[in-house]
Amino acid sequence: MEKKIPYKIYLKEDEIPKQWYNVRADMKNKPAPLLNPGTHKPMTFEELRPVFCDELVKQELDDNTAYFDIPEEIYNFYKMYRPSPLVRAYCLEEKLQTPAKIYYKFEGNNTSGSHKLNSAIAQAYYAKKQGLKGVTTETGAGQWGTALSMACSYFDLDCKVYMVKVSYEQKPFRREVMRTYGASVTPSPSDTTKVGRQILEKYPGTTGSLGCAISEAVEVATENEGYRYVLGSVLNQVLLHQSVIGLEAKAALDKYNITPDIIIGCAGGGSNLGGLISPFMGEKLRGEKDYDIVAVEPASCPSFTRGKFAYDFCDTGMVCPLAKMYTLGSGFIPSANHAGGLRFHGMSSILSQLYHDGYMRAVSVEQTAVFEAAQQFARVEGILPAPESSHAIRAAIDEALKCKETGEEKTILFGLTGTGYFDMVAYQKYNDGVMTDYIPTDEELQKSFDSLPKVD
Ligand SMILES: *Cc1c(COP(=O)(O)O)cnc(C)c1O
Image 1 (spheres, rainbow, N blue to C red):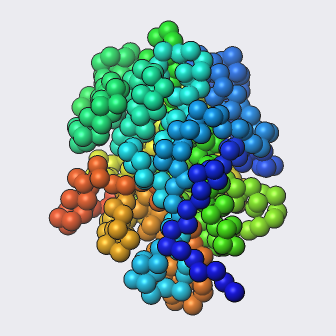
Image 2 (image 1 turned 90 degrees about the vertical axis):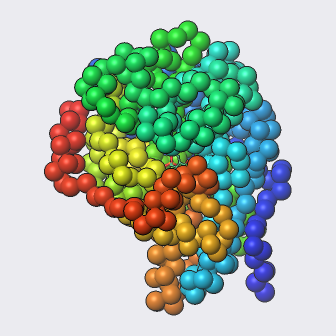
Image 3 (image 1 turned 30 degrees about the vertical axis):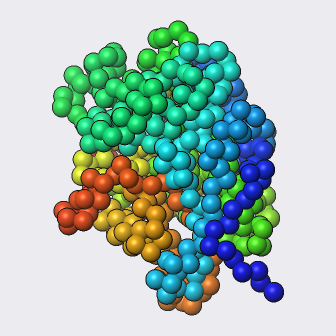
């Protein structure tokens, strides 16, 4: 007999995974290596050491070790907010009148409000263990900066955050949360760095982008003794840490012998999606199981669906290593009316390779449709979702509605990455009916593709 599935499937504290899973170990085509922007040769351990702390460089470069032990200090921190619940969306299913079974893994139950804490705590820990004074980083909407501030205060590390100027101005409360945890927050581009001053000169009045903020944070890390740079998404190490999401989700589903047919996640730089799908993708890569894996991105920043698979800079200042990824070009800045997050021009190299090799697909959605889904979800499931997460909700609802038409009882799993309490300006626009959609033209994209670095 089928066991009755509870509304929430909780793991016990000692069922939090003890190891992270590195999906690269099961990939036949490994993600392309980071390249030195000057020589176009693969970045070595020695070259990456001034930027990232040693243990994280090792994780970044390791394509073969399948499992990494989670150090006890990190595990103890995880216990403060993990395991995170896997929720059966009974109320949403009822509302949609769909035969589909919908589950979501909710990562918003911590003060930072998103999954980003899973990697922030790991990156802060390795910096502390190496005896560093502090770390620098960028933040867009502010979730990553908040997560890192929390992690740094836990390990007593200094934390310097460069926050995209438009968010700094629109989200003063995010800024204050970071300062409460002891971080210093600078709007980017700023005149505190060489690269910031160059960008301001080239684009006066710019409201900034993640790419600009990354350049500034990297400069500060490499020019200050005892500091390293940390990044909240895109990198292989971040996907590794985020595998805790997928491992927990799989363990919870396994308790009730549930196998998802479709796995959906929003994709900005790819870290939550990469983390959620890791163990499932591992099975797919090893030929054990098949899943329909879907990345959801904004139509206004469509890296997978309209980008090029090419080497590109991760930052606007072109100081970072080159990564091979689906990209819109490092000069791409999403339209200012785009309120839904997921603004990064590129994408994780791991996910880019998997997408290129046909192991997953991608869809793009427009922001008014995303907020419509967010509102519908909030009204029946109770949680006020982050706009980023709501991209996944949109796609999950669309799949559930397809099931309603065909009568298929598919099982859908999606990642609900966070809460949207600091995104109320965007919700306000939607509620007031003044939110618009913007889709970049081919000409606009071509302009930014023209500046892709030539790498052979
Ligand atoms: C940062 C963020 C994302 C997007 O980042 P990924 O690296 O693609 O996961 C999605 N949802 C929330 C709530 C975030 O804070």
